[in-house]
Image (cartoon, rainbow, N blue to C red):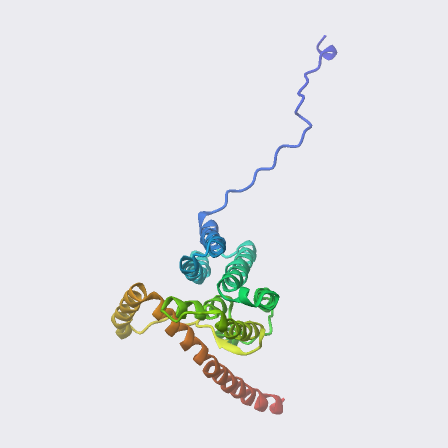
Length: 274
């Protein structure tokens, strides 16, 4: 009689649901910082639509700060991933390409109508091209180690922060009337060209790995003083930083050429010996 009624398990032949491994928090934390930066960039666009340019600029500056630490947090926690790198690039395009372009258009470029909008588009597209080139160069195994000290072209955060120099000056009392729109247009176009150029700019990524013990306390004091000045005089500090960065571009390019020539001289005897 047992053979007439064999046991039946309706779910026995169905595949078991796949169980995903839990993701360590160290992999999530850097992406959370990137998402917070993205929220700031999107909020800056909204503030620009409402004509609140000062908080919009502050949001972009805060997004640039978060962008500067998310990669370092990922490397410190050993939480780097391909997903995080792609998310960071997409966030950078919004924060430092789209948002500054829209802010600058709503601030001054709208006076020039279609021409101003075209320059805003050029700035945003230049930022997208710059980020795409950066991602492609990450996979280049033949790149010398010393070249990691330099970016090719102006990096995205620096390009966005220097492009908004006219807004900093406006906040300090230099009124940007309709007559200033062509000047702003030319300046933004120059920054866009620097972003997609091949001019080497100093990255500073390899700085600070080892700090001499005697420098620790002076560095603390300088950082505290700089932070206090930035909090007390934010837009004055941004003007100084933007101008100093632009002045430092040819200095960094000259240093790059010297190091490239020195490497070429070292390789020449080796090639001759073989």
